[in-house]
Length: 206
Image (cartoon, rainbow, N blue to C red; front, side):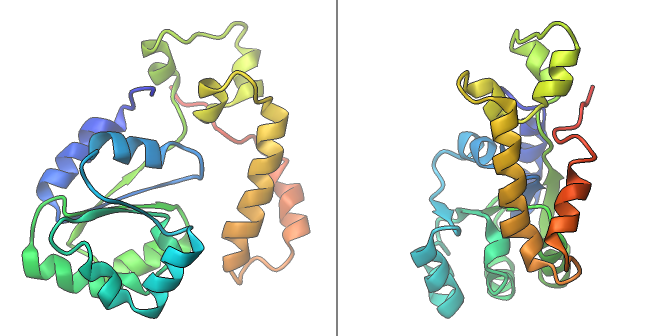
């Protein structure tokens, strides 16, 4: 695992807030980061159909499983019904770092956080890898044009078999189908896909 600059901030927020949300683009390393920092917390993936169905149908009972231990709730934007019930648990225990939430950054997630968890949750935005993080791991690519071609998503550095063109093709399709499809403001996904191709993914950061 490439050590992330966000690790120390995540620990600091978890020491002060009863919940912390790690938000950011898909595949930016959110799950890897939170599971490495909190290895003893139960991990719950809300992309799993059975888990998501239970959480949607009976959010009170679903969260009761983790009221004492806390948990990592991954892709929490998939079940916005949880936020109101989570508010009650956080207020009841007021225990720092009880719940760690991750989610793809979108308007629906931020709206849910703002409405239910304001003042109870610390928020950290995790972007793809920075050049500083790569350099610290001894990963250097020359010439610089290779950075522009490869981008900065972690999977392109943890795997030597995935071609950037294949990764980004799959990434865009997943983004369109899973995230933008939930936003009513985006009516023409085909046109938006063309727009996406006009700007590089995995923006360079210093």
